Image 1: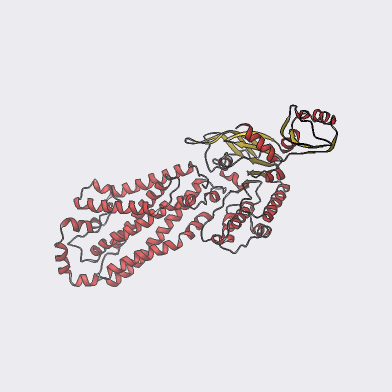
Image 2: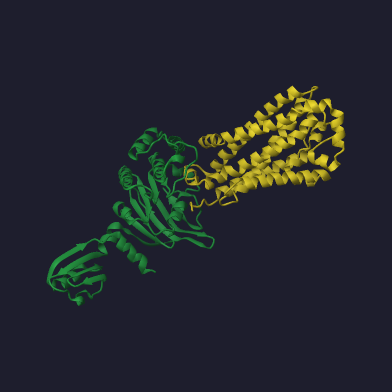
Amino acid sequence: MSVIEIKNLTKNYGKARGIIDVSLTVEQGEIFGFIGPNGAGKSTTIRTLLGLIYPTSGSARIFGKCCTTNPEVREDVGYLPSEVFYYDGMRVIDLLRYSASFYKKDCTKRINELAEIMDLDLKKRIDDLSFGNKKKVGIVQGLIHEPRLIILDEPTAGLDPLMQQRFFELIASENKKGATVFLSSHILREVQKMCERVALIKDGRIIKLEKMSELQGNNFKRIKVEGQSDLDKTIFDMPGVSKLENGGKTASFLYRGDINNIIRKLAQTELSNLSIDEPDLEEIFMHYYSKDG
Amino acid sequence: MNMYLHELKSMRKSTIMWTCSMIAIALVYLSLYPAIFSDGAHFKDMLAGYPASIRAVLGVTLDSVTTLLGFYSMIIAFVVLCGGIQAMNLGMSMLSKETRERTADFLLVKPVSRAAVVTAKILAGLTVFLITDVVYYAGASVIASIVKQSSYSGGLFFMINLTLFFVQLIFFAIGAVVSVFFDRLRSVLPVSLGTVFGCYIIGALVAAGKDDWARFISPFRYFDYSYIIQNSRYETPYLATGAVIVIVSVVTCYFVYARKDIHAVS
């Protein structure tokens, strides 16, 4: 059984576009990335999954059950929204205790552990906290009941780099303990570091669903060459080469296709230097997004 | 239970304020009673000088206005108005505040059903105005026993006070059902004040004509105090109407809230 199973999920907001025919599954123990620009439908997908909004058609299931008809499946779900808001006039510890009271476990020890990791002052009033600190409350709140599924929506917004790192370490350790992670973000670096598989969403539709390794490795190479003399432009005139930047002795481009072809071609030239890298996700991402308009 | 307690806690301060204000109304007016009693004839003459319609609007019955219960039934109208505002406010804010204060993303992803959330909130609201009413009743009883000039029926006094609870129940239910139809209710007070005052004024105007069917429009007119004092009971058709309003509102509230989309913060 898949941890998350979304089938042909569509949500219309009157005239405005929500999401269209989104399908994806996330397996036990996986860290799944969900990438797309703002307004692409990431939050809509997540909110439907959690039962906050109702689908127009299709289904979204967690552990085989739908959150709206079986709210008890949320017992095993930890959710961190992109922006966190809490009740006025409560101290951090009161809120966390209130949150813990919804679950059938004793979370006291866990609250203290997490607060220490995230460097959070439990005695402060939530109203007095900065945006970043409120976010930390959100993180702790989402993890106190040791959920088997962690759903993160733009989790690092507002956190400083040190806290971001601690946060990702925390998520990685939860994952090692067996938690499945669904990470939605528009920051590719985060997703690239963490995720095994990713789905790209654009204008409400999934445009790509692939293993990170395939997305990154098999398709594209970033190649830089340096010739002993000025490079002949015609050698790059072959299928699979894109984004060519040629400046005298040096050239840099993305290559997609059989690696032997390009190596043979390059071998005909006297080179002084050659580097072949994995392109970062950003480049691939831009490729997918610009291609379709 | 945790949600219920959380709700109660969050309404603590406002409950104390409302209760105190309602007792204050009773205290201010009832403290005038001994003077009015000793000068009863003049007071009656003065009121008799008012047009009958004005007397009806104020809820004055000339024959009984100098008795404690008669005088008190004039006062209770203001207390009920106050209580109506409190109840409608409560009803409107309890569910809508989760979206207004953007805490829905916290509460509604917990392993509880929407129905359980509604139940906890309704019970907490009920508790709040029950507490208000009980404390008010105790306060008013003490004040009445101090200012009384002759003995009065405790049973009737209780029945008059119980109307406060009935009217609150109706406005609470109306408030709750109105709130679930808004996507985001930015501010509760204008709507609840408008509705409750609107009903009160309509009720006052209608009362002048004494049309029986027109009394159904305003919950404030479901309980005629001179009728209660004379007959020691409530008028069944109005009581039943009130009950229907409450039941329909609450059922609708569950139904709509359970199927409502909770939109993202924007």
